[in-house]
Length: 384
Ligand SMILES: Nc1ncnc2c1ncn2[C@@H]1O[C@H](COP(=O)(O)OP(=O)(O)O)[C@@H](O)[C@H]1O
Ligand SMILES: [Mg+2]
Image (cartoon, rainbow, N blue to C red; front, side, top):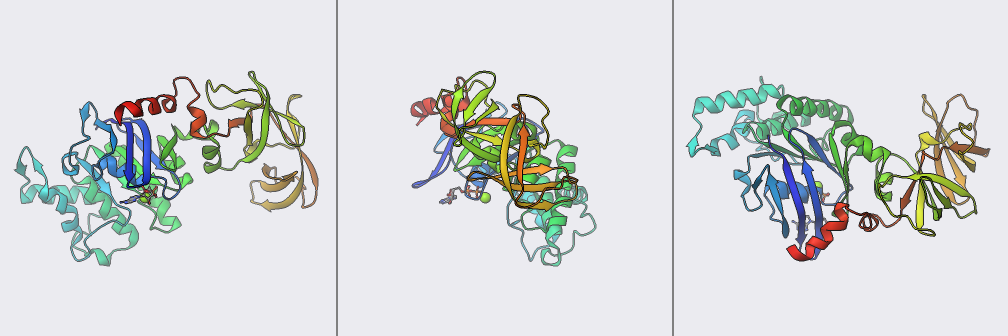
């Protein structure tokens, strides 16, 4: 088991910046997810960790060992590719055995008996123990995924790297396989990096989540922290639902007051420790649907007035879409409330439930004293 340290990594392909300023410590035995939209640099970062790409600059450590220049087969990582990359004409066992046949331990090859034993153990682990003699083309998508996982695990890697392992499976199977991956990951307590673009998947399986956009890691935190304290507008928007109201900072203190376009004042909290808000700074007040209520719980609650445009009954609640001036807003309300399209409504949100976010994304984070984004650019010039 190893801890992975990524230090100021950058990777470009010609003019394309695939990823930059990546600084993270992936703790040993944990499952960390790289989450973000297509093209944000997830696969590139995973391949940097595997050693298939060399970074333009920056360093990668497995524990104290600098592996930046170490070729992939000497990093002892097991990787599952997005398309599985299995050999269709070979048997399940031969696919799984392939990497073991190449592997040397202290310069020695494994014996046939040792290979057979390990292949069987890996197939048992993914509940494919009976199907070793089948050919790949005789397997379902879910079974192929299990074989790919067994092949990654059979070499007893220090690090498991999974690139969108469930994206080719249907919804039901995806949840089953997700639980399988968690089971195996915890059973072996293997340091795992998991790539996905699906926020539900990321939140449900991860110890830590790195939310990426346009090559940059915007936030690296526990799922709970990412949801409760998003550090950028992108993160707040990508994880869960949010209504955003543009405004200007009116006053700064424990509570931040924001003047919104209709002249009203909205009070909220910061989610960014030590962010230096300035008077008149452009910000967004962000509110989660479940944080809007039909009745007041405190005299300091914000009042939000709007016109209902649509309601959707979802059993445990009703989703209410409404307009606050030009802004489309969303609330999750008690299913017994008789709200209907066209109604004028007044909703309440506590000052702790309104998140005030700077608009500059990661550029804003550079203003936070001691923040990794405040220091990585400075060290870039030294390193480049
Ligand atoms: N081998 C490559 N050659 C050129 N551009 C690449 C290559 N691999 C990735 N890119 C570009 O780098 C960016 C990040 O890609 P990628 O890491 O595959 O994103 P993701 O896995 O998040 O979808 C994209 O703009 C992509 O087009
Ligand atoms: Mg990818």
